[in-house]
Amino acid sequence: MAGRPFIGSLTACLVLYGGSVAALDIDFEGSMELELRHFPKEARHKDMEDTFPALAGEFELGFFSPSGRHAVIIAPFARFDRYDHERSHGDLREAKYRYVNGSFEATVGVDKEFWGVTEFLHLVDIINQTDNVESVDGEQKLGQPMVKFSYASNYGTLTSYFLPFFRIRQYYDPVAGRPNAGFIVDDNTSHFESGEGRRTNDYALRYQNNLGPFDIGLSWFDGTSREPQLVVPFPPEVSGLANGLPMLQAHYAFLQQAGLDVQATLGPWLLKLEATQATENRYLPDPQFNNQPSLRMALQEVDVSRATGGIEYTFYNLFDSGTDLGLVAEYMYDERKNDAPHPFGNDIGIGLRWTANDPQSTAILFGGLIDLDTDSASLSLEAERRLGRSFKAILEARFQDKVGATADGVKDAFAAALADEDSVRLRLAYYF
Image (cartoon, rainbow, N blue to C red; front, side, top):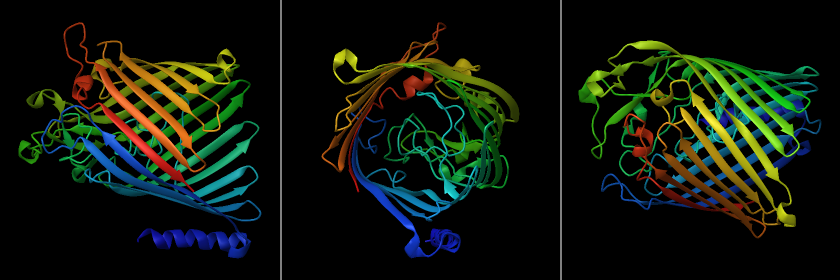
């Protein structure tokens, strides 16, 4: 494996600076998971499956020096899906050397970073690429090669990132995979505005501080956008068809983005806000392809303001039952509204989170999204419960409840594309 020399060098570095292997503290943990996904509605094509069994596993191996200054952490992940070959994939979520000395911290290798505070949409979270084939909620991320330096003081924490390699976003199998939004994406023909492919020189800065009840984050990113623009290939002959569906290609543009995230903790109340101001080059709509962007059109610099925010309130010990109930309400805004290349132009999200606070860690999360321009609505349910000491059952269900239209009668394209892609996902995980 190509990663072995890299991982070996990380371990050797730890032994060199932290002492002998025998003196190291070693942690090992992981999980194995059986998964079954089912799509109850008829697929767009006879070759698409409706039930997908899969097996996944991940573990984390950590070596820590007695002083606590040095650490090597390795966390691989792999999944095998019976029918969706794009979901059969492996990834190094983490493979890093970390050095800590007082207020200074340095990390070299592959790592994961999460920024943000809101529940339904993470606008400022931009370091890692979304593992798009793992889950439709976008919460799973691919490991990102990086060099990171962080310094903490009484005035806050400042962290700098250098990101030398880009991870593309994967899409479901073009023949059998689901969910399918009415098109397929050819991962092998991705376009990069840099012209250098996956080798990049991306940079990011983040400042964090706590001011009384407020947790504040300011960020700056300069590099390749993690969210591709999907474009029609040109000339048209190269846009081959699979299952009768059009094939699109992913264009990764230069992106400069300033971000702000704030959370205020006021007793049972949480007030949350994320906002971004971004500049990137995007292909113009093409009249020849129903105003979809295509590679034959020119690139245009676009400035976009986006924001999401809301409240979360928790009822602790509800009706003296020992359980907690949290209510979440958030608003999502993109100044492009219906012209935005995603379904969060003018939407609200409402959620209920119930936790039993029992030994089995039972929890249920129910959520809904409503488009304020079209009245389209989608629903989701997530539930989990430990079974014994080592097992956990997780259930996820997602439904497109309503496909609406604007006041002018324009149908909600995003909702319509997923109207037949309702899904139920059951996972049984064993932890060791």
